[in-house]
Image (tube, rainbow, N blue to C red):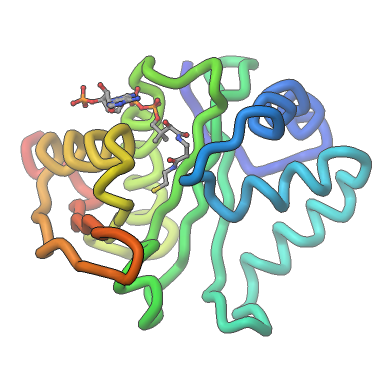
Amino acid sequence: MLKLLEPTKENLQKMKAGLAELKVSPTPYDIGQTETLIKYMENDFDGYLEDWQQKRESQQPDGKVPSTTLFLFDDDKFIGFYNIRHYLNDFLKIRGGHIAYQIIPSERGKGYVKQGLKLVLNWCHNQLGLDEVMLSCNAENHASDRAMTSVMNEVGGHRDPDLKLDSHIERRVWIKTQNERE
Ligand SMILES: CC(C)(COP(=O)(O)OP(=O)(O)OC[C@H]1O[C@@H](n2cnc3c(N)ncnc32)[C@H](O)[C@@H]1OP(=O)(O)O)[C@@H](O)C(=O)NCCC(=O)NCCS
């Protein structure tokens, strides 16, 4: 059964192999949390738990808004993680949005990010009181674009016009946190 978990020493232990996969197979689209996790995972679970809590509670010195990282497990198997920004600042409105995601390489292409995203939408509604959330990606990141578009089509939402940035086109969608079609 799929579930979203907060980090504990016990489940961090179960993520080691998945994070090792991410370390050896990076993509240009890997999210920032990946590097943080890999850094702490080598030997400092306590450091990670402290960092996780601190990022959740307050705005960061570099202006990043409070965020929560949640981990997707299928029963006992680590699948990936979601970084949820509690609100949007000017930067996130253009690129980044409320939710970023990362699935470990050996579990990609199995529909996991979409299933997990629906759990995250519920969490955003229940924990943050958000009725809709923004997601964005480089238009050339086809897996991410298709994932967010599929979930938007399934649960309701709309697409904002693409933005032409210096290096690429950024695609942006808004997704309802409650399924309109249920
Ligand atoms: C993007 C990512 C999260 C997708 O996760 P996933 O669990 O493999 O995605 P899913 O299996 O749920 O598939 C999502 C959609 O993408 C499609 N897809 C999957 N892999 C694809 C690929 N390599 N190329 C094109 N489309 C692909 C699927 O067919 C599906 O489309 P559909 O809904 O129209 O059927 C994963 O590839 C990943 O972690 N990439 C690296 C990090 C990243 O890009 N994060 C997003 C930053 S914006």
